[in-house]
Image (cartoon, rainbow, N blue to C red):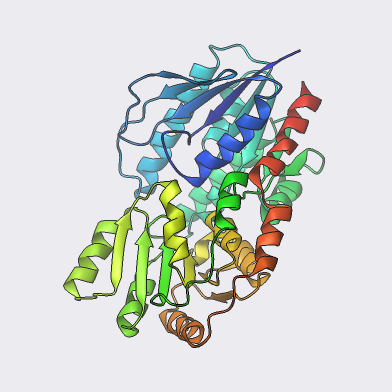
Length: 379
């Protein structure tokens, strides 16, 4: 008998991001045997014209509009995030369901659903966000401790917890429970993976380093721009937007750096054109985010192209396990320049080993069947 699932998330269409893609894979698997109501917070300052969307025969989407606020300010972000998480939970409560699934990385959705949600609940933990709070003062140290305790207390109210990587698994096991955890990795969609298999080496083109992703503080794309300035015979393409996008464009213009081009947000169907003309792919995350695993790295690895990753922790281990890829410390411009120059001298062939590794371990649809199994057991 078909059951009803309420699925609460901060990321869903029309927003195009890694979180949306993860949820899409999950709900498409869940709808094969169940009715799914998705409750979603819209992007900041982008109200949804229709508050209900019929996504498919078995999936309805309900929106909670989110007004614009400065997401760079921690306190403003925390207050608004908690407010909208509670509002989302209360809206979902109006719709009867057999089980509720909530997903982060918006961390305050964890206590909101734990306290105000109804019935059996599953939480999908995507990033230990509270662990990233820097203890730059006694006040922030106390704040981090208080939020961490809140997460520990409220996570215990869930019937099952899913995580995306081993670091998250270990934290949950040590602090919450040892018996009700499942790792459902991030990854790449089957169709996207298949399209990326058509890429061929482009040795006749200009040596091009490509960055695809959020252009924000944590990514510090400026070191790639400075590397382009130091190596004028390469081309650097930056695809994506974020809170440092305009500042970096102005920096390039001011310093007359002619070999860096910004493309902003690009439709997914056109992304393959950028991969096809790339020699090397670059990604980076600040040292604070050593527990994070950017889902973009799964897409990068699926191309078989060389990768330079600036970062520590889980993501660094992933890249170090790939063929023809290099890791550097985040923010280390000198090491990035050295890595680019080494690839200039000899660009490796496309790695079929990397592609196979992703196919066997990180296809989203395959991983999402684990959530179906959890739901079926609990219902």
